[in-house]
Image (cartoon, rainbow, N blue to C red; front, side, top):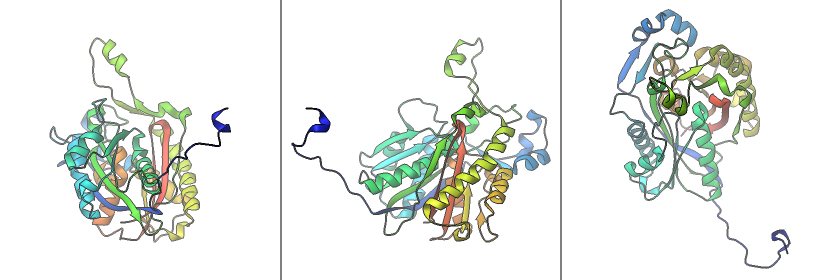
Length: 341
């Protein structure tokens, strides 16, 4: 008798979680050191005007030695937990989205879980580049609704200054550091819409680290692998492909662009944001996150940092409907509609 033919035996128990999940709190950590374009331009033979025209970036933040991936994650997490009114001991799972935790194992999440004082929470890292935070929110929502966890801490954190070449004209002015965190837990109403996610592996090489560690170790003068990006190709792909993904997320959530209050795209480039907004025909009342101007591109941290700034500045209010859209190396992408905590 095969397993599929069996009709006897004791059935397995399953878990039933909350009917709905929502983001209950948002926290952020921005490194103390503010780096203007003036500090970047000489090494890449550029100008402040060129950088602003190409990306919209005026300043970014770089972490110092004490502002590690774990330290920034802990600081952002404490802010999110405080806003959510959730004790760290109630957290059942910690998810860290990052590509710049340079210790290959163990995960940053296990250290973060310990530092914030959780009680033996599940903890793991995910690598989906700039789309990592949105991937984490989708996983957390499913965990809460499936009964595997009641409260999940999702963190997007990067120290991209560690893996960015200061002389690479295509990336040196773009990437930056920071951390953002969200607490996901039970909600009495639908507050996280279905995720639309995927990848376009045919374009795997458009954003990547230049060498793998075998290449580094085999070289006569080993240097840290650095990020490289084919900016024009990424711009064309993201400007139009992501508008389609965003529309799919709206459709699956049962809302239209007219229902939106906020648009929070990955802070990759202001020109990409503008192109997506035009392609989606966003109404004038929709407030658009522009954190990249002062924070640069912080990869997995960019969406929670941008959303936290909108809340802090009064551009996003509790109960607002926000569309999150992220894309990055891989090319991985994800989008979902959420209610602002």
